Length: 200
Image (tube, rainbow, N blue to C red; front, side, top):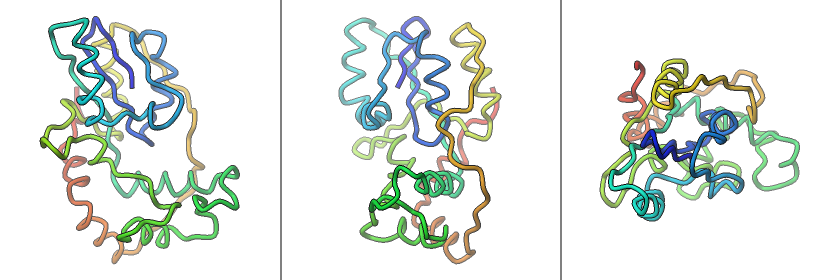
């Protein structure tokens, strides 16, 4: 999470949406940076409004605007699937090595998710289930160039992203049956993605 005081902007770090690259490019310009441990770096919208927003209000009477990225749910899961093939996870319950993408998604859809598939959900990150509130501006990950132009204009700076902390780049396929189940079970995620901003 990055807070830019003069710009009145909070950038929440949705996992698997280039958050590490954005942090590396913008942290030096931010007034508050939550980084390091994943639970801290990837502060959810609900946690932000519960604690961080109140802290920021000590310094300003105006609530900052919140912004975050969302990725197509299937693409987001494929990134997690590839990430969970990392050598550092071998011989741990969180490793997805030896599993097909179908098997990974089966685990994600299970009532009790196995450790390798327990990766959260974007809708839960971007909304407050208790109030129904959500991040002010949710941008589509596929529209990264437009999102960067928005940030450049808002922060009055040029932004160049480096490729950091990226998952291995190899194709995966999902059966039509599992895709239908995923779309039904995580309809809120698909709806948020469909309504995400794509143009400046």
